[in-house]
Image 1 (spheres, rainbow, N blue to C red):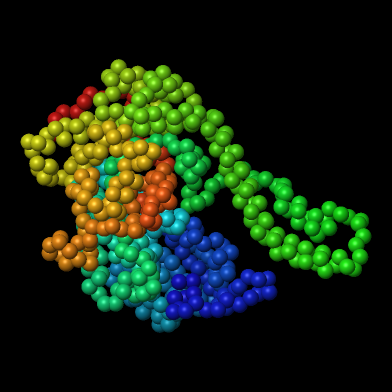
Image 2: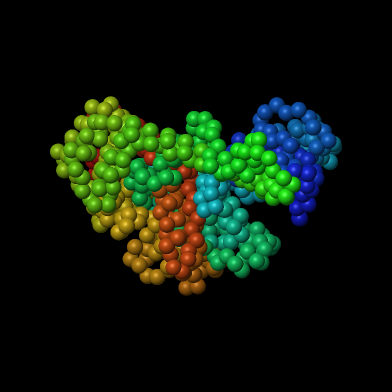
Amino acid sequence: MLHLNLQQQPQLRDSGDGQGEEEAYKILVMDSHCVSILSPVLRVNDLRRHGVTLHLGIDRPRQAVPDAPAVYLVRPTLANADRIAADAAAGLYASFHLNFSTSLPRPLLERLAAACAASPAAVQRVARVADQYLDFVCLEEGLFSLAQPRAYVALNDPAAADADITALIDAVVMGLFCVAATLGVVPVIRCARGGPAEMVAATLDARLRDHLLAKPNLFTEASSASISSFQRPVLCLFDRNFELSVGVQHDWSYRPLVHDVLGLKLNKLKLPAELAKYKQDVDEVNQRTGGGNAGVEFDGTDLIGNTKHLMNAVNSLPELTERKKMIDKHTNIATSLLGHIKERSLDGYCDCENDMLVNGTVDRNTLLSLLRGKGTKEDKLRLAVTYLLSFETPPSSELEQVEAALRESEVDMSAFQYVKRIKALNTQFSAASGTATKSNIVDWAEKLYGQSLSAMTAGVKNLLSDGRQLALTRTVDTLMDGKPNPEVDDYLLFDPRAPRSGTGGQFKGPFREAIVFMIGGGNYIEYRSLMELEHRSQPSKHVIYGATEILSGAEFIHQLAELGQKAGLGGGSSNPPPGPVQ
């Protein structure tokens, strides 16, 4: 895209400083969403190396640069299409190379064409229109987000309109289609029955089937080398309620701590100023170049040796500077983390939650001490919700003490009461399923509301195996093996490349690659667990993890609280158990 969508990238010329520069200079125009897509993977220096002299927001006032081409990367929206047409008519740039993050709908394309046709000069300036299928944020090589905020609230709100749910499902499907197109492979899709995972799976299967009818298509145009070296992956779709506790719990590993405590967003953090002192490697450079031997004479025989040292030192300085920056950054991060850990007793929260989730035990005094002691209100609420999720039927006296401790700490009870209510609803729903079929519940949102914590009723500790392996990780491992297993035997299978009629020819594994996607919000805890699966597997497995958004525990607890408030469960009072599910 940055090379104007040419078939082959132009050669970079050396500007004399060892850095290549693009022959053609250009302007990059983006909307805010596409800035989020590019910023984790390309820095300003990377853009400049590829000839981008300016990067500007499409909704900001911009001066004309009539002798430079412009590359646009924007979402296919009405406002963006109208703004592009206005820019072309005004002649802001020499030529317009238009790139959309997803496919441009036909009505918008016709509107853009009609607007440009009104100005003959504008038509001549539009050099190309391309669908890039880049509507996802790549945070790491094996981690992506669709940057769809509050998806959990939207999918679990009983009052949500069918049209809103359908629109969100379509947006998730488009994002996953973009991921598949970028990988150049058509995945086999697996998911549990019911809920948003099945809706996404069925809609994505239909979209891939329709796209494969066109020849050529995005998947036939992929290079033969990439297709032959990359076995078809399995796309494992999960609903956040599959393992709700992971969304709220505290964790003791580095990535989750940085994300949860320091607010990591798009791979960026705000920290105090970096350390200012160079360390041992830079001192060694000074010694080699004579910086530490002022006044010492040397004869001509040392000239060649000193010149080599000088050249080596000059060549190593950029690398040493980058190393120092990296060390300083992580030193600052660790220092800041330590301060938060001490201030909030995060080690205590982690230990208590680990005992509940893994060992199925809790020290009542420790639990109540944490709820009344250090930590933010979100910390205490997350601990209380974890307690609620860890035991199928906690003692009523103990539960009352937990609620009283939350009220003493002036914690909003909305999220706690919401999970408590859903747990009771789900228990009643499970009990009624023997006499009434689930299909009798017509409204999809109400059905989801009643089913949402089905995995929870058996006790979250039962979903965890030895070694703290998450239920998600164990299920993915099982799906990749492709062997009969009661945990996944009832999972649905969609193969967009297989005939619609019959299931006999569908491939169930084994798979070497998997794309794991969490609908309703993912987190770094699950990402770390899946990476550990990848590293310990023999033969080797490759796993990519994605989610509608990457949430910290505090962010997810706020979404639970919002649902509680929508259900009228706010405040500190304990709500009575709900009536029978109709």
